[in-house]
Amino acid sequence: MLKKVLFIVFLIFIFALLYLNNNFQIIVFGISIFLIGMLFMEDGFKGFSGGYLENIIEKSTSNLFKSISTGILTTSVIQSSSLISIIVISFLGAGLISLSGAIGVIFGSNIGTTTTAWIVSYFGVKINISTFAMPMLIFGVIFKFTSHKTLNAFGFILMGLGFVFLGINYMKDGFETLKEGLNLASFAMEGSLGLIVYVLIGMFATIIIQSSSATLALIITALATNQIIYINALELAIGANIGTTITAVMGALASNENGKRLAVAHFIFNFVTAIFAIIFLNQLASLVLEISNFVGLQKDDYIMQLAIFHTLFNIIGVILVAPFTSKLVKFLETLFIKTIDENVEKSIYLEHNHKDIPNIAMIALIKELERLYDNSIEVISHSLNLHRHDIFGKDHLGRIIKSKNDFIQTDVDDFYNKKIKSLYSDIMYYATIYEQNMDFNQKREVSKIKFACRDLVEAVKDVKYLQKNINKYFKSPNINIHKQYNKLRINIASMIVLIDKIKNSENKAEYNEQLEKSKRRLDKIDYIKNRKIDKLIRNNMIDSSMATSLINDSKYSVDISKRISNVAQILSLKRKYL
View 1 (cartoon, one colour):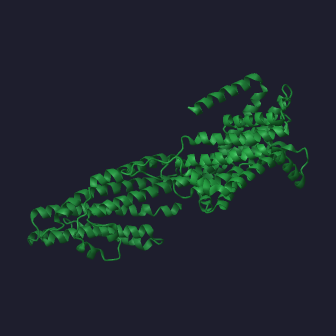
View 2: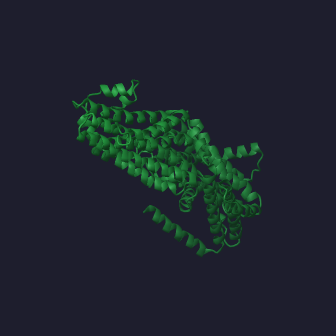
């Protein structure tokens, strides 16, 4: 509801600007072109990263210093704090980084995003940047229409840069033209009242535009054309930082728990930073002047001083808040606690925002497949009157199975409804959502995951029918039928052990060969195909009823073993993406 109201306010505001003065059209057009450029750049880096960006973030968040440094570096390079936020939230959801690591990246991202001010301050207003924009747009379009994935992504980045530079040029020209009919500098205000007014203007401008980078570009171009005074520009920059936090909070309203926690952390960081900057504005301005003199800038080079100020107060914000990260994490973990029905197994790694990062989506799907596999193996084992520690123990399976004489009461239908069905539904639903942004190979792998999930579900349904006769003949006085059912149990348990070795082994070549041999042996277990049933009947070792049960159950045993063996290769995919 709030977003809809803000959108209506935004439309009214734009209409009023365009109606009041035709010269505002150029400025608004410049902002629009700038925002389009930022979107193109974000899309380009999504495709261009190819997992590299995700790997950097995942492997560089082991401590707070690394996390902050990673946030600074990645945001400075790709010029998109929103993309970094998407990746960080996805990593949190997939369990690949900690909440403290994610917060560190967001802190660093706040510093990294100040490079936009440096780019606009130096390249945007001191150089005729439009001469660079046209070639970038031309080559960007050419690369965009190539079939090569990397060149295609690079084309998006070039087009993004071209539109950003073009947007800055239009904003600058717009303010220059506006001076002829309306001098905004006449509305300059100093003192406490000016501080309050311009901080609020910067905040609301960012909320309306939905981009602090665009607001900063607007402030810098206005300052460059003398439409605002320096002190008011600093106050607008502080307001823009507050505004981007409110924008992030509104965006997180529809996000998951991790997204909401990060939004709160972001809000706390920017709020503390803004309060500090407001209280010590004059002292910070003096410090900026000292830094400017030290690096050799002119005293009246207010554009570069604004860039220094923007970076300086964000760095101070990190210095102020970072030492309290552990306490902040403890506080955030008490917020947005998800109510969980302990009786029904649900996915814990699958989230909608993973769809924007295919690699993370694949990891989340495989981790949920692992959970579905573990649940399936639990009910299959119990249906065989075996515990998993029996199967994975060091003793020989045959000896264990012969010695196990206790029933394990297992309601397969109840287990399926509580531990399998809902999790299976989540995986299939999210797999379909994630496929939309994946390449051909990833889509094939997602299809394999879907088939693997279906095989596990079918294996659980098969074991329900097998369980009935296992329990019936478990303590039968007929040693022959008891022996044959033990063979069926050994067959399935052996396949489970083999898959566990494949899943956890670094070198899978040896185990994969064993898996193929085991698959080839499966058909020999079928009592019709191996003709063992004939011998048992002829020698009066079992009666006709036992023979019928054994024929059917041998088929169930083969099907269960085949179905769970199909999952082995898919489970090993996780190492490809980690």
